[in-house]
Length: 279
Image 1 (cartoon, rainbow, N blue to C red):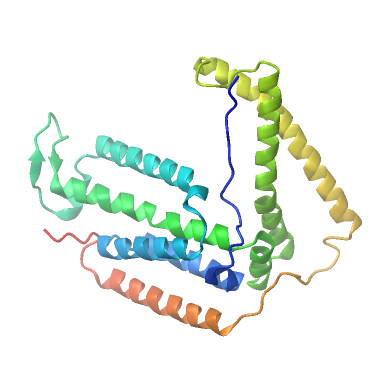
Image 2 (cartoon, rainbow, N blue to C red):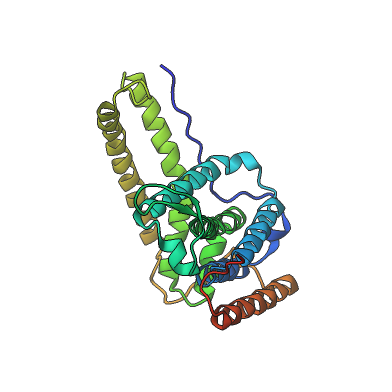
């Protein structure tokens, strides 16, 4: 029986890039500022610039393309399906925002394809996609413990910050357990391949999820006991071994982020129309 191959590539990868040298606080603020910029703008020019800069930063991280290729394909597929459903649910949305109507293809009912609708769907799809590169950059270049230390330095209670760290660190372990349990079940004749009917596959996946849940709970119990024995949570504050000091590059990056975000907010509130439409 052919086994399925599952690879968890979305995790910290120490490639020694310049982005790895930045402080976790800097990268976290960059990520939050990026998301803010994406949320407040519907200008395809700004969105396209964000995508190009994000792809450049992703390349600068030196992470191989094979590490995130499956997620790129999956994200693109979901976004295309989302655009299709948006058109089916609200085919006139683009014309309402642009204030004009240029019919390209006449279809029955209200489903005529217009240039305004296409422009609207492309803008929204690229808007969602623009957060993809920076999210990968943040995950690939920020160690979970460093990220937790940064959260704590920003004022987040260290118990919550450490919980975030544990979640990020043990996601790959849970994936490994899933693969091991899946292979063990396949060796026992449990078929979850494409050859099996859909309901059979769903039923057989449940045979994998059950042991996976119990093994995860067992690991959580072991970690909780170990942390309790070491006195975790006894003090109101704690230090972090992996906390990096802020350097000149971090301050320059933060100044650049602040300036660009300020310009973006001003441009958003000075714009007369929500969508920039050149036609």
